[in-house]
Length: 112
Length: 113
Image (tube, rainbow over the protein chains, first blue to last red):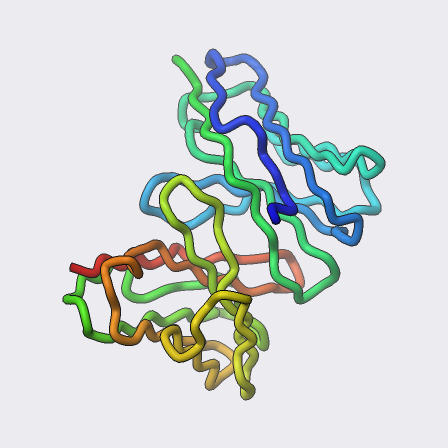
């Protein structure tokens, strides 16, 4: 049973525009969320995190929004750059020291 | 700063051989590390939770006798794929929690011929 879902397998965005990647989860016990970026044949690169006590966290061009009532989080990238082209995974965990559950990823292509 | 490293980054082996993958925490101690596996076009799947000084906890469906995990020190966890077969070919990634967040290793690509 997939507890973390990314329903869009791919997304194409023009350079300079906003990229919005979405993620839904089913487990209401999840209280810590992450977004990762992954290039082929490499390990995940941590992007940004958010805990359930917040609804927004911003780091440079990356902003994560959390809607606990809808069990939904999103990653906004503004402005999008060609180097952002990669697969993005959201992940969730319940409590500290516990494992993460990953979504299936969204492949982002930023068109120059 | 705190980093998680993995060695080797890529290993090719013949079917039937055993392969050891190391996961090290640099500049921090990790009492708990996690081992994930990623198949192409799929999400990372947790294989097991590695605890320093005790037996690893395996996820359902993961053969503990095939994927041996040893967490002998606070900075090193190893995953040994025993009697590897082509279907074990995958990308193996470890991670560890720090006070500042979760760190992932760069991953190890295993190719079994």
